[in-house]
Length: 162
Image (cartoon, rainbow, N blue to C red):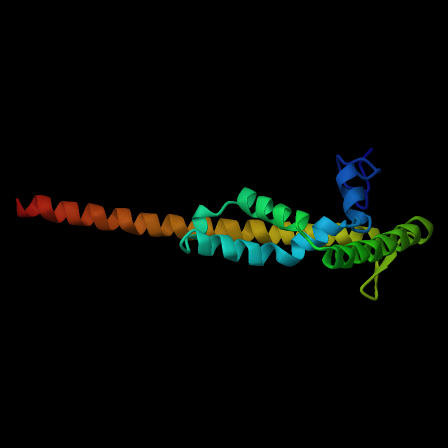
């Protein structure tokens, strides 16, 4: 018996774990995650300045370590600010999770989000990223081909002159 056109071949009817996890509301963020998102770029810039403006000398590990040090030295006022933001994000997450479990969708930024939409968006982003990577590989290959052609042409000229 042939599979119907609506049912894809070779795939099970139940979704795999990755598609289910992608279709759920985004997870709740704690105070450190929110703080890190706020200061990460500034920390990186200050580390680059410390390393004489050479960005390649600054690793992600160094940035994370510096963000962690600064977070541990936060004063009480700033810490409470990020903790309050984390509490708000937890409330958002709880509401979206309840909506998802009851209704099968949740509201995000005033828009109704269905489970498959998030997975589709993630697939589109990864597809466009892979296209841009392949384009850059092709461009770099063309450049290297041009360089090798120039070298071979110059070496053949030298041989002819001898």
